[in-house]
Amino acid sequence: MSARDQILARIRAAVADAPDVPEPARDYLATHTVPDPAALLDLLRRNLADYRAHVHRVAGEELPALIAGVFAGHGVRSLAVPPGLPAAWLADTRAELRHDSAAAPLTPRVLDSVDAVVTGCALAVAETGTIVLDGSEGQGRRALTLVPDLHVCVVRVPGQVVASLPQALPRLDPARPLTWISGPSATSDIELDRVEGVHGPRTLHVVLLGEPEGGGRDGGHGGR
Image (cartoon, rainbow, N blue to C red):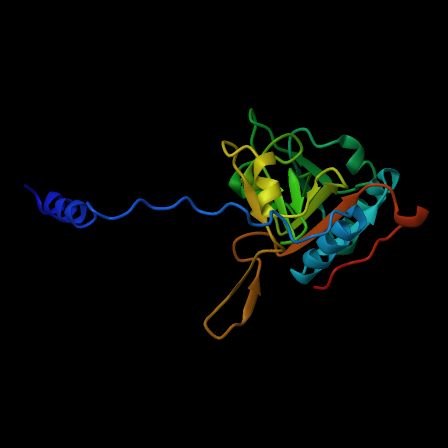
């Protein structure tokens, strides 16, 4: 008998007369947020901004100009485009478009040379300020959103916004390559000096795409 078998045998003998483990309680709350779409969206915006993302709210026809303005503000000259991204989103963009595809993926060298990427998302979680990507149409493979220094992510509201992680998980396919993004990439050393852009984009812009609030436009930015 091996040492492993001896250890396991002793454990089995020790717990042989132990009572059955009770079933865990499942009566916890799935969310701590009131079911109000406006409050949910406001919570998402505040948490995104708290993570130092730039947050914008636009209606559909305003999206191309908003994206072009973000790129102009950051001096973007080249852009990675995932398969299935709506062409209309980039109608006003003057940057060079580098299209990624399964048949002709952008090389690591090319990805490292482009200035930005635009994607959609699978979901946004209000209570945690988290954007979830699953690699489907308009999002692309994970490398597209990890290598370029600027990521612009479009969230369709209210349909892609959920309150909490327990509400998000049933809507996601665990077999897909899920990427969970809470603000721009950042890390801290032992002295708590924050460094951004170490293992992902240095800058994140989140565009909440839907009808404008009160018939107007909110192009506000979160803190940086």
